[in-house]
View 1 (cartoon, helix red, strand yellow):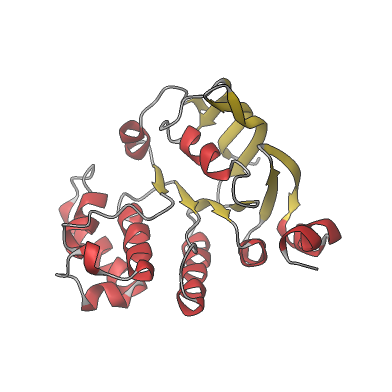
View 2: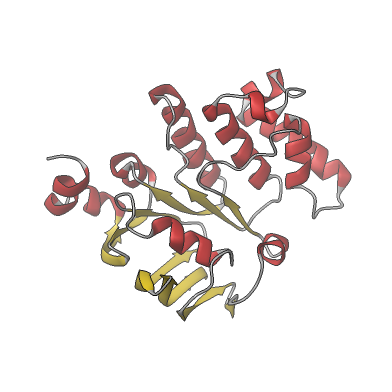
Length: 238
């Protein structure tokens, strides 16, 4: 039996009377890497903010682990295993890399395991080990993205939400970020990935949703979406 960890039903979100998200249905099963693609302004980030409780829903519901999380704050969700890497990274600029990673484990008390996970993050992101005492705000955008992902993983999430992780990064850093996302998924972490880079996102995902003007217009197997002429015309310039 398929275990659905995250389920969005009829989600609507409005800004000042304007509907930014118009009745979105979406689900993520345990162990899946699901991507939500679409152009800038399609409503992808708004959907993510609604999941984490930083934007109120106008209507609809969001279930996590079979229970509604409507009205729950981000703090409670992290404790329950739902972590997000926000668009723009959101690192603690005046804290060191080590301190940022420690903040990711703030809800945990298993010190030996925390130390082991810290070492694991340094293995995944060798650049962070090299600069572990550096202030996060002085790092490049790509390094900050690595740190934001490492910090979220330190909470040992059941579901990891990634909002535009490749935005503004160099091609080499984009390669690294997608490699890490794929590796994290292969280790059993369930991921919902929001991306403008449709070809890269669909290339590593199991399933995909296409969002336009606040609504999901297509969904299905990621490889099938990647070969769909409509997707290729709209997002791959063909």
